[in-house]
Image (cartoon, rainbow, N blue to C red; front, side, top):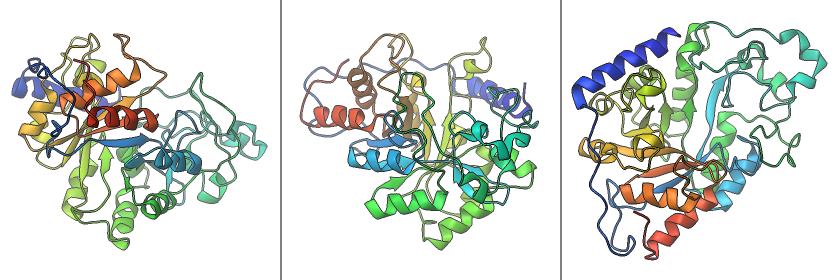
Length: 352
């Protein structure tokens, strides 16, 4: 197991001692929908975050995916950030390129295929592939993107290129929506001399996005970079978390980093949705505990074509999370999340 994954298990064991396994929260009261306020930390309606853009309908992290998400009413667009060989922040979810681009069909790059380097946190890596850190921005610009999720349309494959972080910032700011970049594998990139911290801070400062009121949330699964960012900028920060038993099946299904620890450096916590609504449909007290510490909650990830274990339809699943008090949701299908929120705003009864 990777050293940093082992460290996260250790953090989660501390979480058990500090917070216990948690008791289910009380059911929401009977009655109509949310008509006089929301159960969010501030009472404002929850935000819809377009996960990699409208990635259920367009290739992820493309201009088309972000533009569609904004047209569908998303409040926030989300790019994942990785580093090129020449030190540029570009927008990709994975460090390996064959899944979401046509790199395998480019003979000029055939010799770049290799096994993954040590130190990458993601445990689900191919045995060999093409890796973003081996390519300059100019080389990445020659690749075309594609849809990789089974069952989703490939109609737009080959039409769009790879964007830089600054280009996605331009899209968000020009449309007046927020942006929630996630640093992917920042510890690994730092270990190979491509630390994303400096270019990220530089861009935030140059664009005046380093204040607490910036329309930006910086996310990461790795707390180290968020702690560094907290000392450098006031931009809101989001610590992403997942159930501890994903790493250790014998562990309880609680967050892998204690909420009390997160509250010391972050403004938001981003839990996998199973930390809020368990696979059997039972609600936990995660949101109540987070709100008690002053943390807003961004839940991930909602997909129309990936129903939860209890078989709830997409609108029902989202309404349950909204009713529980989530401050934001990540979704591949922003139109559905917006419609579910609109229905609750209009007084439709939320599912219990």
